[in-house]
Length: 289
Length: 311
Image 1 (tube, rainbow over the protein chains, first blue to last red):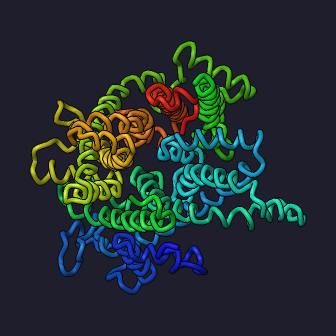
Image 2 (image 1 turned 180 degrees about the horizontal axis):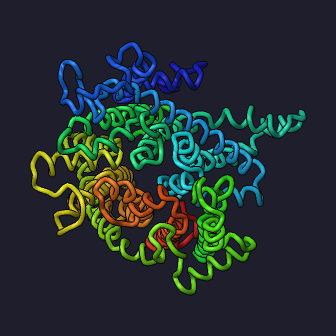
């Protein structure tokens, strides 16, 4: 037995993953960053110096100062407060979209892999198309049907992101479908639904988790892009993409306005990406080069 | 090989059909009455009937579909814009050049910078070079296009005042938008190239080449590079549709009069014939690019050529 094997006898897979994850500096940095962002969004009303929509018309487009640490926007709203509140929207959008698309993709992937045949063929062709289509263009097409707005944008993004889940889950389902314990489950008369969700799904949970961690930042970026284009969150929502869309107009006279919401997006996305990389390496240690 | 190609042609046809059906359905999938939705609440009955007729919604749905498709295939006619009162094809052909100029330049930047950076990171693995390239890549990949664009504008346009901020003009106007579109791709390609290179450098035949005393440069550039480049060549095609996706945002940031900007304006103005045409064109392009990638992959990778089994 190798050293690692000896130390890991009887330890659950998740504990093992956490052990490896903990040793990864970048991943732990990502986790700490994310915890801070979550704390900010939870405590926004306590730590924000002003209301995110309160206008101070006498203080329009003020540069950063002790009174307004990140400066003010075109309506005299405090940019710091708006950036802090914006984390709530970004996290909510990212997590909800990733979960909805995971639910769609996992279900279709399980069905596709388990039943095979013509059902599999049809689902996989749809997956091919959705998967190769640039997400933003597909999301835009769906928003053109549903109309602009944050909720519609979230639905549209979820509908563009499910394909990778379906692919992975289908592949893993195919490989475990013929295992003995599935056959045993069938023999004792378990229903298909139960076999799919309580026998096969646990096998693919770790891959799904990694994918969700990567999809949250993508969803945040696409949602912010839609808001920037005027098709997502609408004023006066303190959305980072929407703020940058206005900031663009005032780029030459209020450069600070373009900086802070963008840094917020970048830090949030970066934290998820670091965690995703760490999680992937911890779950599949043989892939680490 | 033959089986592989037949399978890919089959999937190509299905995908083209799906894209066609989807773009056609955009108008019909609008919840409620599309004509009402486009005109708003205060339209007169006369306006209502006129638009319904113009969009062909007064005919049975299969007739609408055949008309729509036949006009595109036979005459390149996508109908009339609801806003500008000119044919959609005219609107698009005015703008397509600008989009091609932007995406083409970005595409060149992406490979011209991404490949050498990736190779350097792989050769100097776990040194300052590697960490610098990978660190930069992580940052670039975490910036949305529109913010990267704003930052570049701020640095080169507002602070240094050496490049124009937006609009079209001479070659200097192309630099910032194409960097905005190209730099995140540089990051993706550098990472991909590094991973491939490390993968190949670990292979037995590279070990053999080294063991028989070939100079390191020759091993890297002759034996390793050729195989490491295979996935990159495929990616050159796969990436094209995504550049068009990025162009939508980039064109909006830089007030660049291309197809992406047109798509956004058309969605906001509910100009459905234009939206349908653009989704159809970009969708078709996506399918063609993927098909080309599949073929090129089969052609350059001997493993696929012989066994017909592709990853």
